Image (cartoon, rainbow, N blue to C red; front, top):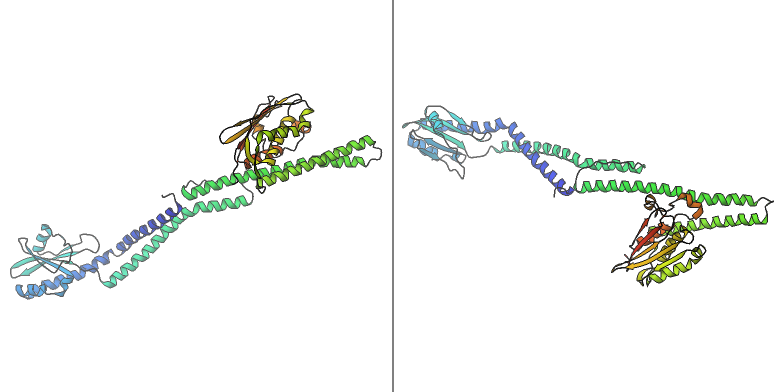
Length: 455
């Protein structure tokens, strides 16, 4: 419960107000301690002395009759003790619990001493006076029943509220500093990120909303750092991929201006220029397609079709690639009906099979199989090619990534095919993974739901 920022603020406010009130109470009581006691002591002493003079002046019965009819008994309570400890009281208590008179206090007053007792420290007082009557000395104890005067109460309350306000405000300021500190750290971190500094450590240990916000902020910072690195890599890769064909086109275009070229040389140069231009066109198309897929602006056109038939059609369509190199296919295709985007999945099988053919040795074998359960269908495509290292397997679905740079010129390609495959499979709520060893071929496993949701 205390993990909630709302609850924490409320509790902080309550603790501050209650704490400030308690502190202010003790402060005002300490400041006015003597005045509180004097405010009770002197009127009480004067009233007691008046009662003593009444008993000294009037006969006992008249004095008792006079005292019992006094209006001041609304504010004071009188007890008159004889030597045996019996007492007679004057005035109504009205629920007030009288202070207990001890034998020692009674004896002191009967011996002629004035006893002033402050039992509770502040604003509590009772007085013992010797009272001489016709029947001998008695002990009179007087205690107040009424609160301090209205004027004094007003001043005391004003002082109490002033100290309460000051103490509560100070506690609120101190508490607010601890609550605001994590937010200030987040603000400073935001400014650092705005200028490109992603090495931010908040070190906020709090729980609840602030702790969750801090952890989410650190995760966001990490993701932004990765995105920035990916952006830089993307710019670098695009520049590199574009620069190579542009250099070839520019170089061979200049060579064509030479007059002494033979017709065969001129034709070969033109073929190179056309091939490099076609390579740039394909790379541009791949970038545009991947951009559309990642932005999800291209909606899936879901239809139900036979997956095994689609894969067979793709293999037939790319026959010129594998027939010329004497590559064979071993097919184990179960009849599976699937709801998906036909054209997009056609691109998936074309790209994967194209890679398998590209990296297989002449006369190699490519195995394609389909398995199915109640919810998913799994397509396995295995070749006997050069294989992929474990380190490269983690990056092979990134755009522009090429597993073996030393083979770039031999095998060609822009490194965009598997990135497109990955995005299409993700849009179908599926999964793609790779199993491979260097020199022992590669297996690509694509798992797709039989029915793809349109959400």
